[in-house]
Image (tube, rainbow, N blue to C red; front, side):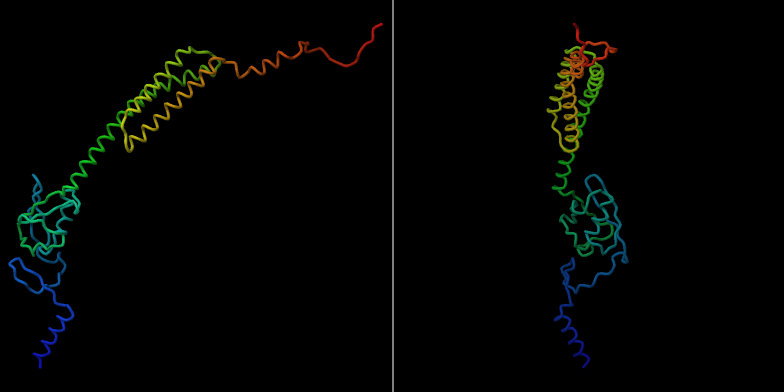
Length: 252
């Protein structure tokens, strides 16, 4: 009776799908046991080779390769998705257990960086270098524009004060600013460098506009007071003490 009950329970477990199987390294098919907390089991040391670097990593014996990748992040700076782990010449998935494929204490594992990830990093490095170079070129132009801006501001104060300046000086500053504008146009910029270049282009354009206004004002420094002068000239030249009335005197 007891034997029947035991058999019946085994059949029920199979029917319910409660029995799972796993393949051991030696090729033996055994009933899969539920994994317990890996940290509560024995620890093993794994020798990980990464190019010319070697890392001794200690992990629980029942860890997965995915767990090992997480530990290697701190050692290598590579994210799990950027890592490829090889054991005995074969790449292993993150879900595979170390002990299931024969990884033991002092076993050797090879770490390779994912080629696609390596290529992305190289491209990003090139972009960063390009942006840095463009920023340096914009900075050189900025230094020149700052000096020209000081000269423009000085002349603007003179012209607004009603004093004429040499027209050639205004034209010379305009030409120098246009040279810097052309220099900015030759800079291939992206990202932050593009933002800085745009700001300098606008600054140069504002300075050129200021010089154009100064040229017009410089040609007629008293144009703003012309109307009042014309009005004053049109007034009758009577002394301030003269009193004008409409009383007419009749002469015989």
